[in-house]
Image 1 (tube, rainbow, N blue to C red):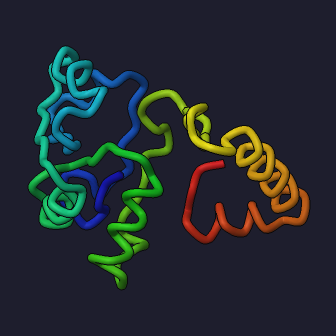
Image 2 (cartoon, rainbow, N blue to C red):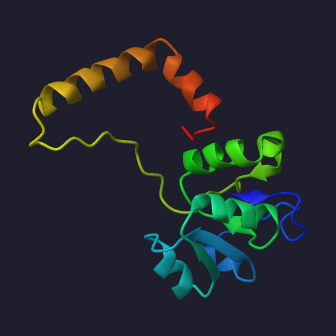
Amino acid sequence: MYYDKNHTTSKPVRYETIEDLKGYKIGLIRGATFEKVLKQAGLTIEPTTQVEQSIRKLAHGRIDFYLTEQMVISDVVKRLYPNEMENFKTLPKPYGDKLPNALLVSKKYPGAERMLKDFNAGLEIIKSNGTYDRIISKYRMPK
């Protein structure tokens, strides 16, 4: 994500490889799985311990991009900057592999198998009746 009122990212930023983002300050949560990869690529990393802290840094131009799950960012931006949602943008080509959403339930949890079966049945219902797409759209989640 970037803040389009930041002078370094006000123009569309295009990249092919992560190395193309050298010269920008990248914010992320300290210890994120991709922190090491970004450092090895020679990028300038600005880790924080809280998403809110990074979003504030982004809005004040102290970092140029912030990397984390889109849903998390959208939720924090909505709380901190509700009147500026349209100024927080995502790059046309997101970083990293798209991972599927999943519900994790321990096999040791009582009724885990039934819980997963019920969840999957409910998920199928909301996908078929359009509710799932409305939720995805409302929270600006990638499909």
